[in-house]
Image 1 (spheres, rainbow, N blue to C red):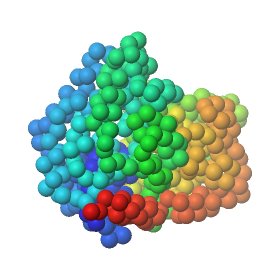
Image 2: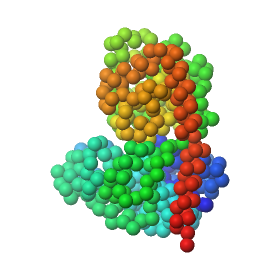
Image 3: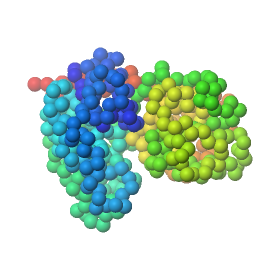
Image 4: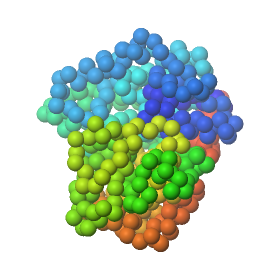
Length: 413
């Protein structure tokens, strides 16, 4: 079977890296897999870079639709600008197209219906099911017809979100489309949405190479990253770590302040990746080490292995790759008991799930993991076992391959 994975980038960003890992897993399983992207960063010969004048103009012109809503501060995409992806897809001529993260003006809503191929959409966020937002932030209007959008600060039913929702409903009405949800939470969101409530939805967790993401001796990892050997290290990181409010840095700050007031003092330091110190104006309660943006898997594995605990205080996550990566490296994870992270972290087995979104309990979870060396060792072992058992890229590829073959049989003449 010839499968085409379609996305904005191959390795730039969490969703892109998730798609590329699936591609590698499929190839290892013998599937003829290729990628079609606008932003190619790897040297993989099976990644096709689609660069035309339209793909160049897409991102800046796609945002023109938001000019009437200047207060909007969240990711919001109209996907109205024309693209020329159809000829590229036809030239590759896959048996099946797996759509991934395609926002930022890369793929027009109406183009999807013209591929004339069985489609599987992997839900890296909520955009496919909403009127334009990447995450709903508690709004349930995507379960109806959107409009009066709180993220647009709109007071009108017939606003941009309603227009986008109507375009999706019209273009995708008779589409040969199935969905893959990386977590039970986003599967439930899709099932409750007006656009996808009647679609097939399979839950397949994100995968990773558990040979690359593995425990590295902590002393070695700290030496290589120039981190202190005699401190408890709390790790936090994500793309846009300190600027993207969805990642929860603003909730981590008061949690750290609580720990400082509780007497952790000189025993604890913080490590941040995904941002430089110049990007953060916040004053942490402990000494902080900023590693900057990490893009290679080996350095990320070192960062996870160097830490005693990883904190993922996200408000919403389709899955939460940093949490699964951390578990694979044997580092317990503290997160909120919400959204996709519930599929990764098992409370007091390989980490701690704090009450959403209570800062005091987040601090309690960090202290609970750090407070007992023997307990942390048990958590570390359980973390590694969970990652190998549930999140290996081979397991992910096998489940996708089974789905591909089933859909292929259903669509065979």
